[in-house]
Length: 245
Image 1 (spheres, rainbow, N blue to C red):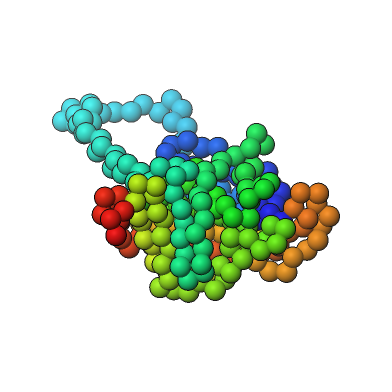
Image 2 (cartoon, rainbow, N blue to C red; image 1 turned 90 degrees about the horizontal axis):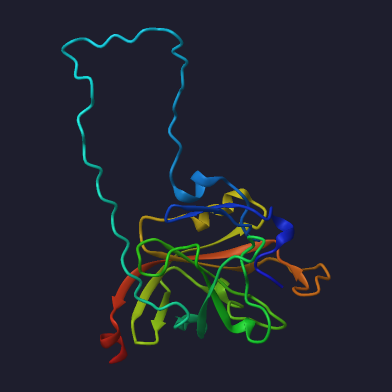
């Protein structure tokens, strides 16, 4: 089983992070366009051919526009958690799982945990924000992987439940669940769960629905739905404080 399936999507989808645009195919997400992910829209510009029409500049009109300074971009906070060195803890589900960094394979398809131990791993995707840096950090994990997996009971999550990210140095980020919902794996609108946000949130994705056996030699089959849990940052404790209790 995989929470990302190539059969349900094109292998390329548009993704933007830090000014870098590239294509990625997600099993739960179809292509909805660059502006849908980045939250930006293209300007509505009409181009006209002026031909030989002369342009007359009145004598009292300055021939050049005043120079204005471009505002400096808002700096992105430094990550508080070292990649590959923190746990996701969900007390309501009894989850305490290692978070590993995943990206794209050579075909621009998101990598997923496979092999021994894959059932217990949570994937954080490096094309999303790092936790604690002010935007949307996207995580995923299996609901089943040759038996029950890390997010087998994720559907039991409810608004108000806490999700903690605990670093090796004791740094702790606490998120509070605000939404639990399902999306169709083939619905292009499901791309919106991956969008960058103006607030610090995490998005957790796993499979949902009735398993369909496809005979796939690796995953066995697929699920038609995706369960999405969204949580907002509520508290940040630096390492020295959280490590000391």
